[in-house]
Length: 284
Ligand code: MN
Image (cartoon, rainbow, N blue to C red; front, side, top):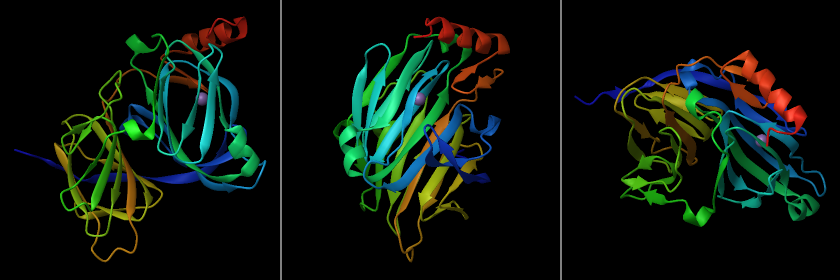
């Protein structure tokens, strides 16, 4: 029998400053209910004046993955191993920090000069203990390579960043089974999204009001789903605006979390080792 998932609880967001001081909207608290997702930051939207845009200068990571999905703006990425690249509207960087990366995430110099709208997401995905010290891996996927699929009536568009939706699979490979979708639902739009039973499922709404079965999730809320096989999402015919959501799912990682700043390990000892490696110049 197919079990419908419903909205179990909602997590509110707060606006906080991240990196060098740019504003993000962040659901607090993330918890065991949101495993394996440790952090969900909506960067902006901010309309930066010329020469004002702020990013995150050099900093380390170990023990998890950072996923950057840019909706608007232009960013530059560079790490201490010599990897670099840029992110433009719609591009995704899925970075598996593994044993260690030291990188900067900054507005592109041209964007910094002219200013403009920056809007996007950074999500932290935990890694199981067995994968925390894996070799770092980058998957830089330009917008045109992210699969996009529409419902038959074209009222729902899904960008399939990880996992599957409407029989379309993502191109990004994940260490543990992750679903990461950007859905846009026009007024009157409906979609049934499958999620394997037992996986944690959640939805972050960043414009409009979404119906999850009979309940409502509003702009700036993270909705945690109950367990089941699928979830029924819709937008009222009379809605005045499109609804945009990130749909996330993944397994519960039942392991202790020791987290300090940019490191997410299992024990205090491993955090101290990460700092020792960083200070010795052997982290990355
Ligand atoms: Mn970072």
